[in-house]
Structure formats: structure tokens, C-alpha cells
Length: 182
Ligand code: IMP
Ligand code: MG
Image 1 (cartoon, protein in one colour):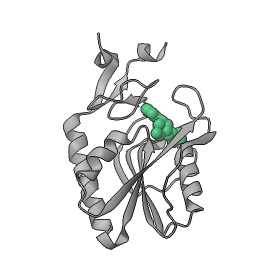
Image 2 (cartoon, protein in one colour; image 1 turned 90 degrees about the vertical axis):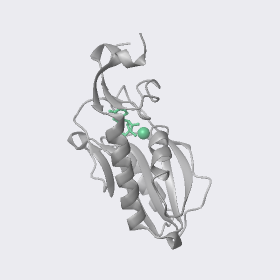
Image 3 (tube, protein in one colour; image 1 turned 30 degrees about the horizontal axis):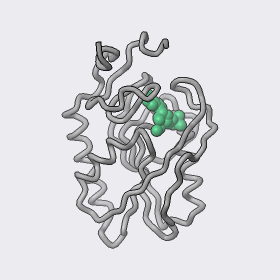
Image 4 (cartoon, protein in one colour; image 1 turned 90 degrees about the horizontal axis):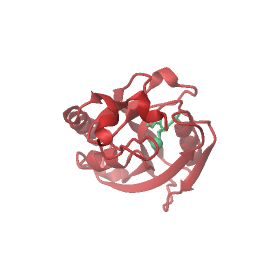
């Protein structure tokens, strides 16, 4: 028995993720110039693996920074109460910012982050998310770079967790229902 046994099926295999991340990197390279002095803001923890692969597909100059957000709620449902656990160590006034997220579900977390960072005077702010679950949206959010649209299922792997497990999987999979009931 291992973590992989809790996966009902693989939704996005490793090769598909790698191919799509390379395409996203190319889109980002085409959007910015070195003079933009881009700052990537990785939303922890879920986006850490995506960020690591994405920046290796980028050749436009950039800095990386991190922000950790917690959204209270049960299991997969975010309550909309969002809190900053780790803030940027860097000023983003007049800077070009690209937020890097793992998944946009209700949109509440991203809405909070963009409104919060928006008050800090960035020159521009865009969003890159690996996954988008549009069927669950509660708040309209603008997404500039999207890896994959996923169905209304709880997904894990490639940075995404359930109760802090499964982040290390190289693919994105759907959890078996038994694995939720703990
Ligand atoms: P939102 O605020 O509802 O958009 O939720 C966004 C956050 O909830 C993401 O950054 C994830 O951390 C988490 N989340 C939402 N859906 C999933 C999922 O299917 N698997 C794992 N985490 C998820
Ligand atoms: Mg997250």
C-alpha cells in the first residue's frame, strides 16, 4: 500500500503536464520582456512544483517570491475566509507581477490575493494557474494563463494535496472516495 493506491484514476499524466507547462512558459516569455523585471508570486503550498517546472521553461528575466494563504473550510470546500500565513518580503510597487497558482476553484482565494496585491500598486498583475475548475466558481476572476480545465472532482498530486498528502505525485489524479473518509 502506498499513496498511489488511493488514486482512483490518473487525470493528467506526467508527460501531459510537462508539455503544457512548457507551452505556458513560452506564452509567458512572449508576454514579457527582460525590461519588465517580472516578479512571480508563487502561492504556497500547492503551486511549488508547478513554479519549479515553469521557471525552467522560461527565459525572460524574473524574480520569484512566495506567499502562503490559508482558506478555512472543510475538506475541499473553501469557506471564503482567507488569511495570509506568509507575506511577500518584497515591495511590488510599480512592478510587473505574475501570480502562480495551482488551482482556481471557487475563486475566493485568488480574489482575495488579487485585491490585496492590487492595493500595493503593481504596474501590472496577471494570473497563471495550472488548473481551472470553472464549474465551481463563485467569484469571477480573470485568468491570463491556464494549463488545464478540470472537472468537478477533487484532484491531488503535482503539488496539490489532500490533508497534506499526495503533493509529491508526478501526475494529477482523482482520489478514491475511501481516501476522503478519514
Ligand atoms: P478557491 O479559493 O475555492 O478557488 O480554492 C483554491 C484553493 O483550494 C487552491 O489553491 C487549493 O489549495 C484548494 N483546492 C481547490 N480545489 C482543490 C482540489 O481539487 N484539490 C486540491 N486542492 C484544491
Ligand atoms: Mg492553493
